[in-house]
Amino acid sequence: MAFSKSARRAKIRTRIRARVLGTAQRPRLSVFRSNKQIYAQLIDDAHGTTIASASSALMKEAQAVAKVDQARIVGRTIAEKAKAAGIDEVVFDRGGYLYHGRVKSLAEAAREAGLKF
Image (cartoon, rainbow, N blue to C red; front, side, top):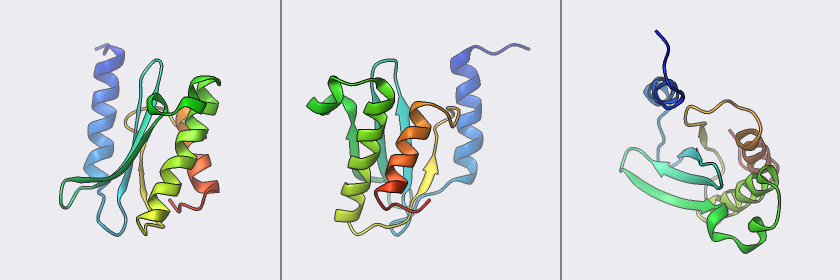
């Protein structure tokens, strides 16, 4: 049976979320990618709270560059916010997207800025 793109992503996302769980010490770095923007959140699943978030939609410098570079800026920003909140380690949740392109550049930029996956 063929799935639509969104149904396929939802199925993969459900599978990932069954295994990936964020805590206060090691939150989940969740990525959402739309056609125009990319968003990242640090989520504590134990308490159901968002610790920090970053998105290309809210950053002026991210609007004038390519999408992969936008993702790099968001990755660096979320890592800086994590460090400010006293977080060094995260669990990466790619949200059903392939680890490629924008998702990969966001993750690599967060690693370069000091987050451990």
